[in-house]
Length: 356
Image (cartoon, rainbow, N blue to C red; front, side, top):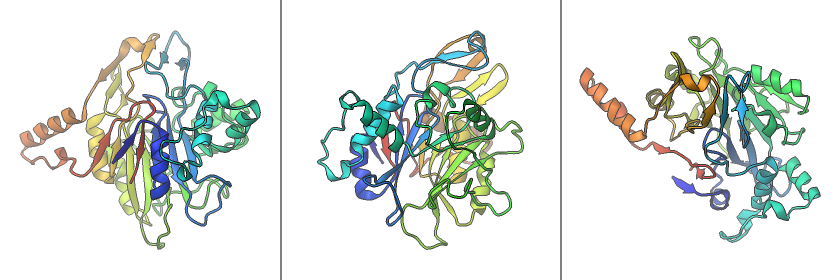
């Protein structure tokens, strides 16, 4: 596992290894997933990475229904404050592979207005929105993104985003197929041929609050029957047994990373974030090589809802020890308490992880 405090080093190494980079844009659940273009696949000239922006909320408050009911602010500043700043970083890094490791990207304030417009059009290739709530689907941040950027969102979020009439193309994310157990491309030509997206839900969660986004990709030449790589993003957590169907996928899905938080959060008696114990079971079921925490920022909160929120903060060591005690007490041993070769990481705001 290689951790970088910014995109600079990650881009340089990823370009040499043709491996994905995961970058935490804030301390909560906004991400950039950067995928190397497969060899011989068409791509934008001068670009060697396909950038997927996930659940962006960079600054300002987020409020659902009304501020008196629920309002939150980031307690830790986002690593970039605007989409223009993000795009400037990505533009400055796009040729990092051919430059010395210490080369610094162009700073946003050195760009002309015309340069900024070019950046906005070219550097964010795709947006993924997991929920309609404003800490995931933040209108102020999203409307900074170029309208020609394709958006893939869950059904409720897609309807909301479409109502803004800002983006040219908004696609609902399809469900992971129960019939033949394969992820489905949302619409012909909407995604590169080597990339697919779907949503995993469970019957016990009728409102799909506890669901997961599955991104699968083939960035290295491989036989048709060889496993495709995937990343599971579940900011609220998905009931762990809902991932069992992945074992039936054809071609086989090799889960590279599971993004699932550690904190157990309730609103009165309603379970919001499923937390560390569920994440541990989910990791064991899907076999993810990397487990990365997400949506665990303890934000500055106001409004009525904040009075009823209950948060149990777990660390990885605490949950492993707790799981070990539970299993030993039940007499079934403690295999689940040993994460073995799983790489767990809690990325701070602005940190990047090279997924080998």
